[in-house]
Length: 209
Image 1: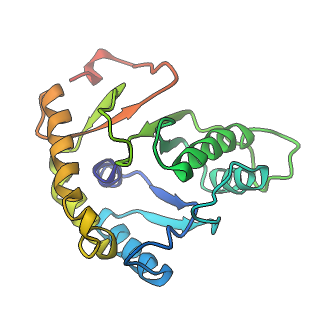
Image 2: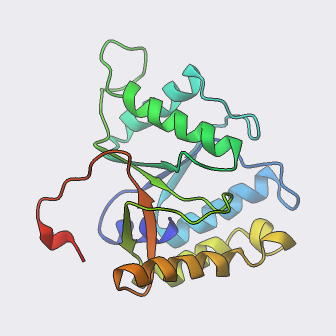
């Protein structure tokens, strides 16, 4: 959803990426390299990032993990929360989704031990990761035609993951093909798909393409 991040930033929103883990180990990466690559991608997209330091490849939806994320939601007054789609091939992604769902709920509770003032992000949207080899069935799609180049540049910032790691060298092109296909379904050059479990309300039908 790099195009969406870039568009939100361009429209004046503050976007925070919360890495639950370092993402390491990987075949060509190190924690230090991944952190530097993430910083480079953030500079391209215009967002900020924090890392909760939870264990990669062993991520679990524990109370401690969801309270740690809930504290971040409170601190940054989160209004819109994104998480991986609940159907995914990566166990850490599945755990991350459950942590995000539970943190959203816990963040609104009064009389809790979670630091900060209660807040309930008004919307939780799910993005589609690339691990699941299936066609997504999105609820909505956001036009990122003007952000395509910026998204690709941010992906290429992860050299250890998409340039030096041979199995992923076609990933940037595959993501671009998906975005162009989704865009063709709504009459634009490129779009990113999202899914919502909850009913989405519109203030006006003018919001529809």
